[in-house]
Amino acid sequence: MSSAQFVQYLISGITSGSVYALVGLGFTIIYAVTKIINFAQGEFVMLGGLLSFTLIHSAGLPAVPALILSIIIAAAIGAVMYLLAIRPAQKASVVSLIIITIGAAIFIRGIVGQELTKSFVRPPSFSGEESISFLGAHIDPQALWIIGTMVMVTIILHLFLTYTMVGKALKACAINPVASSLVGINPRTMALLAFVLASAVGGIGGVVLAPFTPMSYQSGVMLGLKGFVAAAIGGFRSPVAAVFGGLLLGIVESFAVAANWGPFTSAYKDAIALVVLLLILLVRSGKLAEEERAG
Amino acid sequence: MLVRLKRYWSYLAIAAVIAFFILIPFDWFLGRYTTLMIFIGIYTIVTVGLCLLMGYTGQVSLGQAAFFGMGAYVSAILSKTYGVNPWGAMIVAAVMTGAFAYIIGYPIFRLKGNYLAMATLGLGLIMWILFKELSQFTGGPDGMSGIPFLAIGGFIFDTSFRRYFLVWAFCLAVLLISQNIIGSRIGRALRAIHGSEAAAESIGINVTQFKVKILVLSAVLASLAGSLLVFNMNFVNPQTFDFMSSVKLVVMAVIGGLASIWGAVFGAGVTRLLSEELLVRFVGWDIVIYGLILVLIMIFMPDGLFVKLKEIFERLRLRYRQRGTEP
Image (tube, rainbow over the protein chains, first blue to last red):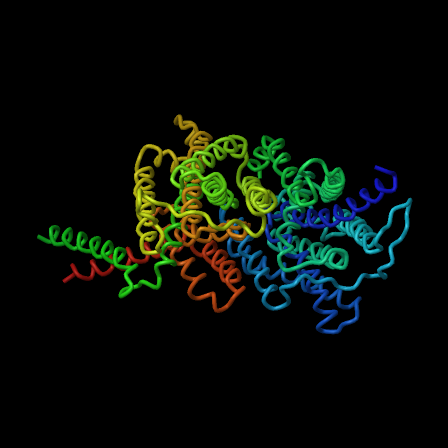
């Protein structure tokens, strides 16, 4: 592998890793506050991508308001999902909650497939199609947008959680819901906030990803799964850990495909994430069981 | 007198149900629903396995389509490519799938709840990718056609009339066997595990071993159903075993009531009927409806629709009976 190729694969890995990181952030935020794994997390990325395409092409909005509106709609759908499907089932068992979030996921997917579009769509790139040369590699400028957005989102989220009152309340609620409700933090409001934040972050991921990789209403499953892997590598603990998990997964995927070893061609790209998922779950199973008991 | 009359009535009711099921495939009765009924029978077998797994052990499987697909593909490849007798292929498929479930059972049941769900989801997707990509064996995304029919001697199950009875014979056997398991020591152990794993363990139940056993059973059932599916359609393709397929199996189990064997027939029946008769006119809306069903049932009747209906029926009967005895 030449150094140019190396850089090419590395950047491609970081790019897809950034998207996984954004999805993983969503998983981590919701899990920290509510102890729920939101199986619909990938759908918000899909929503962001498809909404931005629809708003630009069918509604004819200019790019920037269309993108912002897509993210707001995705966040609103996240809020509605929490209020209508999760809150009424607060006392439900883990299995029930899993089934509920899956139900919500296929509901959203079905509506989007019927009402927006069934085909793969690709909204226009943010800043032209001409690729940039960097250390002999050719880079799609949209990839830089994706990486930059991920970094910005992570920093803003970190600042929000560390320096604002609401962010601190969210963190407190994640650490100890009972104690935080004693000091006047409403756990239900915080859960709603977590869902809104997670779906907004997912929507942002979709908005920046769609011009890079065409998306369809069915893209949510794999994105959700890979975001889960990212969050699992990070141990569902801190947002920053989820980001590293996402980047790691993206890079592993990219180089595994590059190695093109034996029968493992690009057709198996998605299987790599799944194998990583199973390995992590099994290696960490003792620890995870402990957490489940504590949580 | 009343007791004898009541027993008489219940025998009559059972006889009527059996007669109804026997008459369904005749053209002058409900003949046009024969194919639909075959699918309901096949899916009932998978759903029974899933109900046992989810309802009685409280473990969720989002990858049941993997076992279903393994049964289907192993049967298809052995009987078509290698010319193995279909019955033999069916047995080999069931043994292979069961062994696979046994091997993955111990590591996977170290996980619980959310993580177990994700692991089964991942497993299901891996199998689906293999079905699609191992095209030298499986025919790739287009699938395989020209798979033979099942036959006993010279009697070939080549009409849907004949296959109806074949599938429902299997289905009935599976239902009765499962019913027996639930009533046995194993069934009580499983219910104990569902109640509290720690308590079950403290009275000497090997929790993991029971969970693995039930996973193997559910995998073998799914594999049998998969074999029946390919020998019924003479065709197999990967779309039948994708993620949505696993979710639809969960829908069937949820409608049927997670801890109810006979509810599985109801769940598979309602779901197939919805898919094939009602929703074909609204292509694409089916997953919206299924999503809604999942959310609503889990919020309002977490024990499943069938179980809830049974409860309502019981309550009405009690009220009716009370009114009858009061002066």
